[in-house]
Length: 186
Image (cartoon, rainbow, N blue to C red):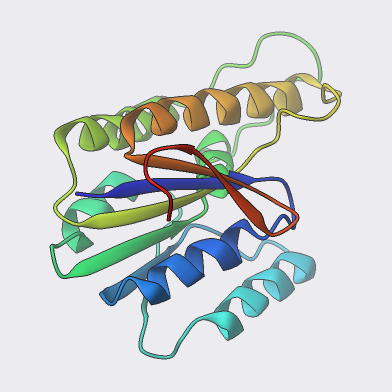
C-alpha cells in the first residue's frame, strides 16, 4: 500500500495535483467522488471535475460508505483517488437530516462516528492498493460563526491529522505548488 494525503485550501490546486499523480502512476485509476450536487453551484463544480478526468478512469460515486468502497476497489494494479474527505465529512455530519443549533453543543450522528472509525481502521490495517486522498485545510482562517461551522472545522482538522498520521505521504498544496510534509517526494 502507498497512501498519500493531498490537502490545501479552496482552489489551491490540490485536486489537479492529485489527478496528475494518479495519471503519472501508470496504474488503472478509480476516482471516488464524495460530492453531491445539492444546488446549481455545486453541480457546476462537479461538472468541472468530471471534465478534467480522463475518459478511461472509472468513477465511483459514494457520499457515505468510504471504507466499504476502498475495500471493494483497492487492488495492487489500481490507484484509488478519493476527492474529497471534507465533502465526505460534511455528508456524514448531515446524513440523518438533523438541524443543528446555532449555539451550544453539537451531537453528530452515530453513522458519522462509525464511518470515520471505519476509514481510520482500514488505514491502520492497510489498503490492498495505492490511494490518494484529497482534503481541504479549513483551519487556517478565522474561527467560523455558529456551532455547526465550528464543529465542521474541528472535525475536518481532526480527520486530516488522523489520516496524515496513517498515510505514507502528506502533501500540502498552496497556489498550485506542492510541499511534501511527510514521506518521499512525489
